[in-house]
Image (tube, rainbow over all chains, first blue to last red; front, top):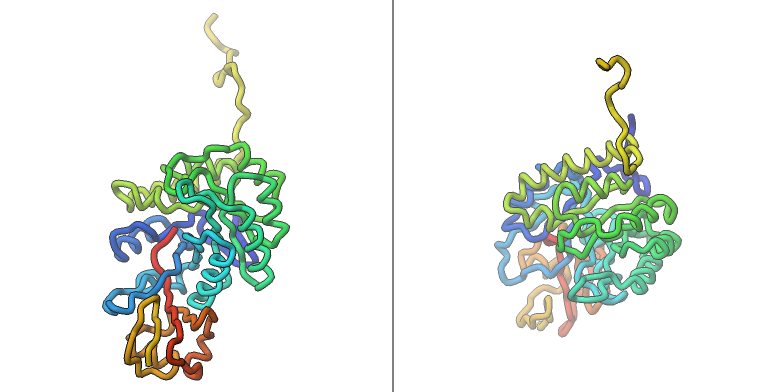
Length: 258
Length: 66
């Protein structure tokens, strides 16, 4: 059975997407990405260290020919900054993909969805493939789609919190009725079961950074997440049984010794 | 000339163009984006874009992020 994720003509081999932040070095980053099976990796745009030119480049370890590089605009609190970082990322990179973040608050890192909507509209017109990091609001997801988002990336829980999918009902509404574009849960996935839950809800993919990077054994967790995403997707496609309060026997009553 | 590069003032820059500046700083031009006075310089223009004394230059690349 063919079950491909395609966003604006780009085919994604893996439904697990991984971040590259918080690893101790590039070697560990590379090993973890390989264990995860992901073909999409997020990166950030930052100043080159011009005083220490011995410092290596992330792309020496992550081959852009092998992986889809998805730059983010993390750390941007205004529309102007998010546009500037997106344009720099496109120039530094190899594609029009951007994981658009316009952050509204330092403590929660919740998105400023008003700024996000404005930035999405502008960047979509400039030819970017915009994947906005948004909250779990179905109406905002629809607005972002209308503004030209190629997919929407609702949060499961705050970035780095590991709280899992806090509002599965809204995520389901986003998937089932709010938008036609792919839905990628971004942020909050703390362990394998969280990733499986996201996929069982019908998400098209899951993006994880801290849930893997912060684990005691990131390589093992990357592998766990890989399997959880595959299992969750299969369970979604298989169609789970309805929940009910009382039992239904699995074994026949016929032929019992009575 | 004097340039402000990534927020730091750098004196005695010999480079006259963006590509010469990247060479002088030992930065691989393929993996960066360059902004001069808030305008992005296309890679195709690196060898022709002339830098002026006092220009603010930003040189960015990809780092780990989520």
